[in-house]
Image (cartoon, rainbow, N blue to C red):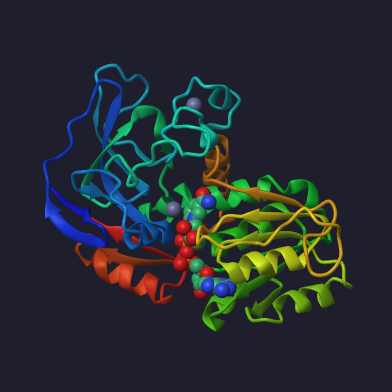
Length: 346
Ligand code: NAD
Ligand code: ZN
Ligand code: ZN
């Protein structure tokens, strides 16, 4: 089969590889679509090797069951679904509490095994998955379903975790209207009655935010925090979701969040919010504000995302590419040219 593999730091190659063999508790999935996430760019950019041998990328996967492991019950060849990306242990105290996204098996500050970031991922014709990571999608198109696995899941989890602050009339800021952010705007629209302010450096992304339901779009610059304070009578936004995570957006989030508000770090660009333990005053974090480094989401969050999409409340803006054109998709994402999510079709 064909697979898009990381063959060395920063090197992506389309290679011929054997179709994966499955174990007794696995499924073999024929991939229908695999989303390209900005995290894949981080993986390509950092000079680390996640494993010794080539690794297939792709952690947003939707497809059809091709084969069922000998011990798997309740699944059949031909079923359509997507893949929950936290391949958690299922028995640690976080897993049994329903917090599979922070499974403890890999370690305190690590993440559970994730396809395409350790085990082979879905940018291939077939992928091996643990049977319990399969989530049915009914008749939904694969290119719509794949981005639910991360872009929607991660956004939904961050938003759900801030729900106390998202009362009707509150202001929520979405920083970075890319693959994740454009879904975050739709989720806020679907499950809250807040005013949604979108922030991006690119005007076309603000236009997309408007189509997704944002009430207002702001160009990101040195004045963005001031503008948000003006819009909120000096109070700040009850919630700020940072889907970029560089120094500028981390600072912006700290300076624009309201007292008792929620600042949620999702983007992984290594930004420093400059939070210290000094007294209040100046542009720093206000009293009572909470900061959460939000990772992926729980399986129950994923079911909620699938339900929202099936109800018509979520519509992914997708750019489709043939698997062989993966490098072109990567290049377009790097240059900020993708509107919504790039999705590879094997
Ligand atoms: P993307 O490239 O699709 O979107 C990024 C958006 O941010 C673009 O619209 C871009 O124009 C905008 N942007 C860039 N710099 C900006 C700035 N200074 N101010 C405002 N907007 C700016 O990326 P994505 O796939 O949506 O991923 C977003 C981030 O989230 C990445 O860092 C990714 O690694 C991370 N991520 C985290 C998790 C998690 O669980 N924490 C999960 C998935 C992705
Ligand atoms: Zn991702
Ligand atoms: Zn666990």
